[in-house]
Image 1 (cartoon, helix red, strand yellow):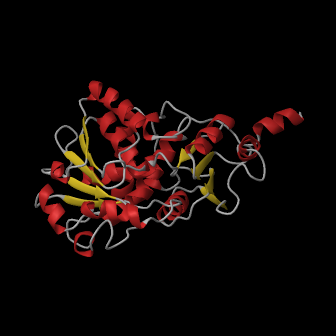
Image 2 (cartoon, helix red, strand yellow; image 1 turned 30 degrees about the vertical axis):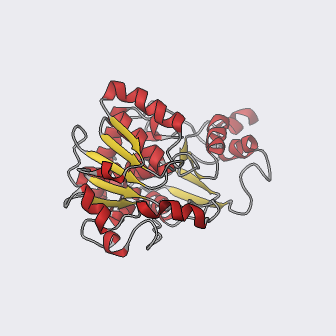
Image 3 (cartoon, helix red, strand yellow; image 1 turned 90 degrees about the horizontal axis):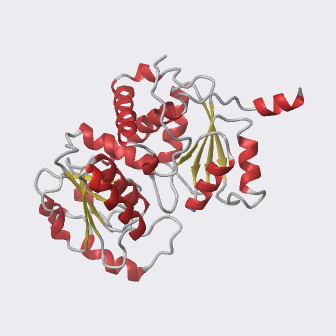
Length: 324
């Protein structure tokens, strides 16, 4: 079985919990898992991963469940779409139960406060599989996809077009940690969280990242890839007024031409075809959306391996000790 360098954090609540060299290690492991599928076998044999989902999912659930199976781990899915965490019993009590049985908790939730609350209450690692503010697992898969296509962390630039949402936040964090360029283009009033951007700009002073936030789509000129997401995020109220504000930011062939003829198209999916992106773009040869989806599994497998590498916690050990 391969050995993995441990990361210096218990939990992954956001991408910025990881240092630059830790992200590089995770991405190298993810690339190896994809290149050599046999290398993942048995990597987490005998481990149990609890999956708490307050939101519907295709890619997140499938990639974690299939990924755990390939590593010899057990993935246990708990559906909390109708009973949000903290409703039936306190978040801390729930977490204290889970830590007695499982080696890690993967949570796809409505609020970032739920992630941080679980992390504070439990001894086992908590991985943010999506919340209202961050989506670190998606960002890792996106980085793997970009690097596969020749993205240069020192010179290339990513363009985000659309809503300044959770995925946008994680990608801006990625740029600020690794030192690449990112241009975020949103309608006025829909910019990414100012506090998160401010933290990233401060970090970029050390890493050399170039972070730009604007409402001008012409700013994507020369970008290595153009990334968009749904205009109405899961859980938000559908609004005809909001969609009207975003129409000039639809990624169509004309907008892609601003980036340049070699620019890739990215989307974390699900896509609302005819809204944030046209069929001719998402189905084009420049589209890497299904590479991103596949890489969710490889990147998450690598993340779990590095996160659990040095964890000696034995679920149930505290209870056994107390019984003696």
